[in-house]
Length: 264
Image (tube, rainbow, N blue to C red; front, top):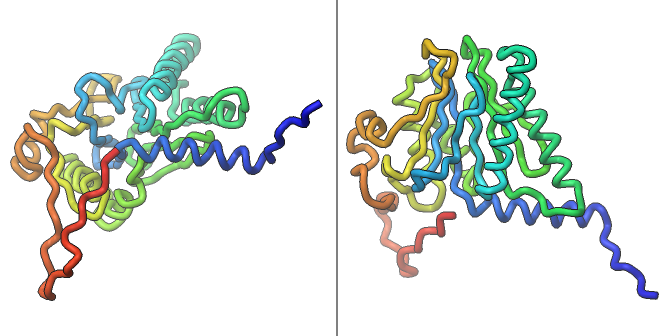
């Protein structure tokens, strides 16, 4: 009789985590950032049909990176859960914290199960409050871990580089235009070379607490982004441009210009 191949639980969890991280690293980053009147979401997404940022309920939004089919299943499940809870009890009983806990249980169960592969996704669940102090942003990872973020949060393949730029340039209680400009600039600082992202290749949405209707979610169109930024991010059409930092006064090195890293 053959002896079954043994893998320690620690090694199994490490392999599953590495697998999920590699899949997430191929995705383009998404930024969630608070501003004076709510929460803004900015992501690089050239597709006009497949959304990374969506509405879940009146004051709650959802954003994700990674495999589209996997986070779309979670989004639909979240919408159904929110509708059922709001219909069975009261609309105020639907909270971002409750949805984040439900997502965490689902992701944790899938990650720990040996019967299916872990989800290669990270997600944001955000809820806008009546006041800025009541805003909530939750970041959930592939293993079900939940982080309560404040001010801003980044997820995706270049989260560390984008987060470093936001840490240096983010200021609380800014207006929407200023916050969007900082977020777009941060997404462009995801490698050794700085990229200028065009409006047509961005997906932007906000949870605006000043809206009179109960639903606070609103998408910002490419035309509106062009009006806000003018030519700051280049023309509305065409691919993202790449610029190199200005040369230093010292003589250039002989190894030549380095190619930009691939964008997932």
